[in-house]
Image (tube, rainbow, N blue to C red):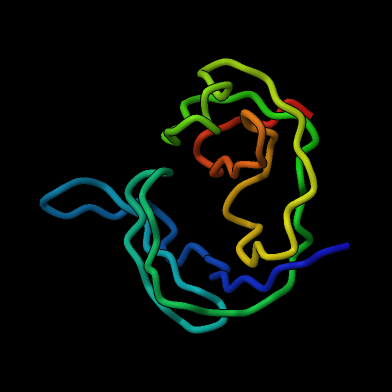
Length: 122
C-alpha cells in the first residue's frame, strides 16, 4: 500500500466557553504537539499553515469519479465534461505528485484530474 507523509496539527480546545472580540465569537485552539494557538471562528476557517507533526497516511485511490468541473483544455480533455463519470487508471511512473489528483483516460491519452475537480463515486 502506498503512503504519503503529511504534517498535521492536532488541535485541542483551550477555552471552556466561546470567547468574543470586536469581530465575532471564537474558540481558542492549541496544537498538542507544537503549542501553536489559533482563533477558530468557523468550521471552514483554515488553521495556521505552520508545519507540525509528520505522519504517514495511506493514499486512498478512488476507482470511479464524477467530474464536478474540470479546468483542463485541449483535445485530450474533450471527453471530460461536467457530470461525466470516468474510471480511474494507474498513474504513470513519472508522476511524483499522485496525491494531487487521479488519472483517467482522456481522448486518446491519460490525463490528470485534480482533487477539487471531481467527487468520488467508489
